[in-house]
Image 1 (cartoon, rainbow, N blue to C red):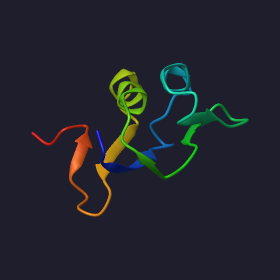
Image 2 (image 1 turned 90 degrees about the vertical axis):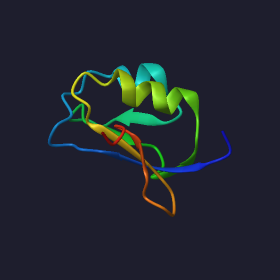
Image 3 (image 1 turned 90 degrees about the horizontal axis):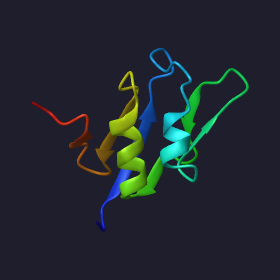
Image 4 (image 1 turned 60 degrees about the vertical axis):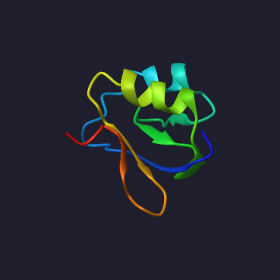
Length: 77
């Protein structure tokens, strides 16, 4: 994949399911309130991080291409 991504979690939407941590434990963590956050706001593109975003039951995770801001997930329609 070679791209760099900006990863955000909308903490107002996150329900703390932990699915993101299950998919990408190196990419996400839950805090003491069971709210998800990315371990780093900028990361190399990776299948586990994308799978975490796709698997989030409330689509609280947004991924954009670093620099251009183009949506990776959720995809623009």
